[in-house]
Amino acid sequence: MEIKLSPRFKKSFAKLHPRIQRKAVEKMAVFRKNQFDPRLNTHKLRGERKDEWAYSVDYSYRIVFVFLKDDVMLCLDIGTHDELY
Image (cartoon, rainbow, N blue to C red; front, side, top):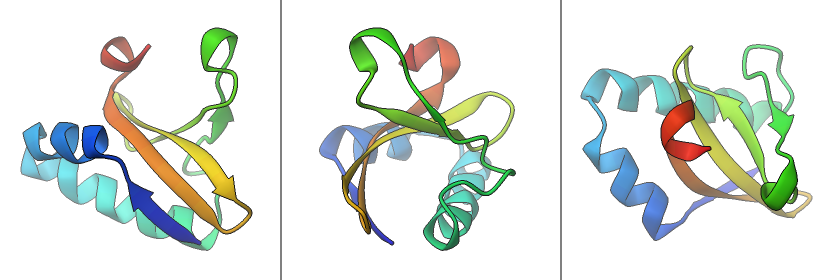
């Protein structure tokens, strides 16, 4: 799985506490191996964001992404549930 990062994701990621950044990198490694690993709680979004997906970094933080191809995904943003939804 190839993971690409949008400019918005990079900006949001840079603002995060280093502890959350480390967790996000760890979860990306899990995602790269298995996009639907139960530890990620990967789920499809609804409504206006029905083409997007999200997975959990921890209890508060999520990564929102889209599949570009079967083996390529684009991270759109990272943040808390309230910031993203």
